[in-house]
Amino acid sequence: MNVAVRAAVRKALHHNMEVYGVFHGFAGLIQGEISPLDTNSVADIIHRGGTILRTARSEEFKTAAGRHKALRQLARWGIEGLLVIGGDGSFRGARELAASGITTIGVPATIDNDLYGSDYTIGFDTAVNTAIEAINKIRDTAASHERTYVVEVMGRRSGQIALWAGLAGGAESILIPEIEFDLERVCERIVRGFKGGKLHSIIVVAEGAARGEEIGFYIQEHTGLETRVTVLGHIQRGGSPTAFDRVLSSQMAAYAVDLLREGKTGLGVVIQEGRLRTMGLEEILSGKKALDVDLYQLADILAM
Ligand code: F6P
Image (cartoon, rainbow, N blue to C red; front, side, top):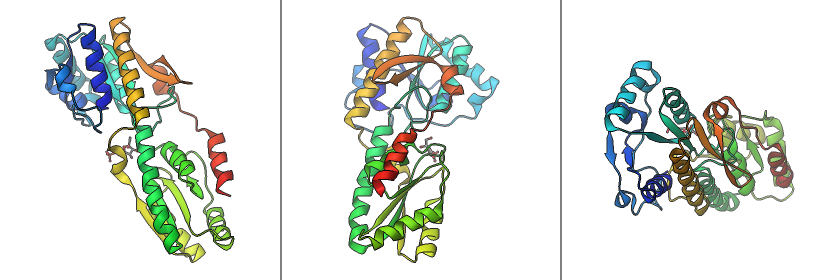
């Protein structure tokens, strides 16, 4: 997100626009936590995870009274256009602001990569790489001890991180909310693998599919094999962004600034087949991203 903030600020300054940062998301907007941003305010953040603008969940913004306060702050500060960087909650807020007449553009940023319309969202690649790094390390100890490991990754409603990390990490099975799974089959595969000479098994589970602990318990009970569970948790939400994420964030945020300059509103920036495009916030929010079933099947075939 920091990379997107940096790109938005510098692209806007390049066009002689005045730039303000809203701190703590919609909660801060309601409170008027707004300050001017210059080129130095975004210096030295390109390699840092998180966001210098901080963030917060805001229940108040979901109410008409809360949004009214936010609109008053925007008017008070003379803000003519707003970039909203975030996932579906942020996009819902952006849609409300656009409907109230504020020129608003959404920039998709969520590690879950679950926003409809965009092949990738900012943060996903970094989270997947963090998960793979962890799986690589777990693999070392799994092989040494000849154990089964269950690795729980994030994804409350989405199996995207699990699918990518599972495929790239060479997992034996990937359990995700989008596809029904059969734990007996998972256990059979583990046992078959060990009998066939595999030194270990790694099962990747998305938090939205099941709790890693439950899966680990089931596997140990049904196979008799020593099983350990690792929950990666919030380490997936931090860390230095990958090159892919940095380029994507820079491009998306810069494009969003161009859209604001053109007076466009109610749109989200998306990337499809490598090209930046726009899609209505309404369409993004009402769509459901389809899982790449081919990728899932490929992971299944390669796990053997
Ligand atoms: O929505 C993104 C996400 O990373 C989910 O995958 C995860 O369940 C959730 O955020 C964690 O949210 P919190 O930090 O509030 O626990």
